[in-house]
Length: 194
Image (cartoon, rainbow, N blue to C red; front, side, top):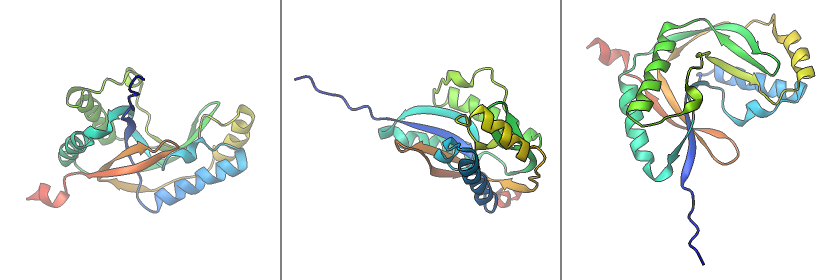
């Protein structure tokens, strides 16, 4: 009988996860949309801004991934992100938007290059797509009719505030949903001033 090989690759992605109270507020919006508009897809991950799309990695080599992301993050500087109400990708997705941020765009671009050159990740899904940071509250499982009803409700709704981005989060798929797996802190402003 042939030996069955177990695939030890797991799915991961790299993101920014907003701090409290924004994390909880975004999660409340996800639950609201799930209950009111029957879109549960957004509940399969914590509130996040994707920096690097899902990729496969050998679980037994996680230590290499962790070490690399620790080193990458230690070279990054904290910056602020400002909300810019709600927006959408018609006819399926509704999200919390952000004001343009040169610091975030540069972080994402630098991380993409790092993942390609240092981790040898060649995620073709990331090629040539414009970067559009957001926090999804209603996902692609939203039916078109429900999208139009939901967008009528959210298009003029306000979401304002600012938070400090000072780490990256590695998310890992547990077979059913995405979980925040490890946090990688940026260079502290105290050590940067020394």
